[in-house]
Amino acid sequence: DTGVSQNPRHKITKRGQNVTFRCDPISEHNRLYWYRQTLGQGPEFLTYFQNEAQLEKSRLLSDRFSAERPKGSFSTLEIQRTEQGDSAMYLCASSRTGDEQFFGPGTRLTVL
Amino acid sequence: QKEVEQDPGPLSVPEGAIVSLNCTYSNSAFQYFMWYRQYSRKGPELLMYTYSSGNKEDGRFTAQVDKSSKYISLFIRDSQPSDSATYLCAMKLTGGGNKLTFGTGTQLKVEL
Image (tube, rainbow over all chains, first blue to last red; front, side):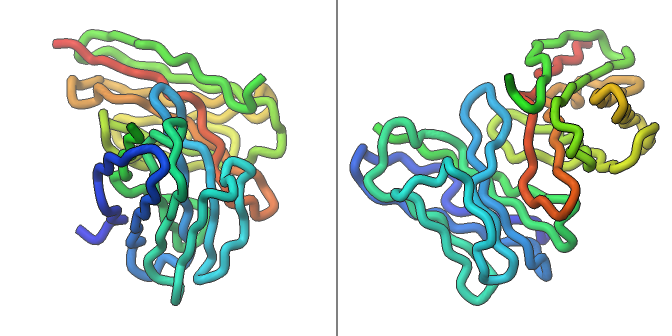
């Protein structure tokens, strides 16, 4: 199966620490998206890449969050100085056409 | 008021029942509509994608869109216990918008 993969699947960290998540999109999908999902809610859009260019960022993406997609392949999402409110599932999706978006399994972050 | 409203449930039905899941939306610029299925602690899985009013059928699933009423539905025929999951509706703007806007999800349980 060559679906979207995300690592790590789970991350537990202490408040104030930095964390980084990785997303590997479906091969040949040039569009990549990050979303955040909290318990009982639908995913909320964070940011969008087309190839290596970050074309859209949500206001949810505070200065402590940064995302990159070097060379237009995998992407990383870094959260600096984590807060308890950052605890959530971080989801990555990819798309070839921008229409259908296919999601990975997510990274569950717990900030203690 | 949220842009996309979805009854969170839970909805409990007997095996073999026809299930009806619904979302309403307020922004008439939403033109692309999706249904995702999400099992506990997993990423969303794309079930249906449509961009026109009317019905689209795929196996036991039928997606219905009524743009005039800003209302979409997903019907599941002959429901199975394996259909027990959270069902998320999602929408995308016309004109090249990239992000998906999700409902909160409806939790479905199909009982033997």
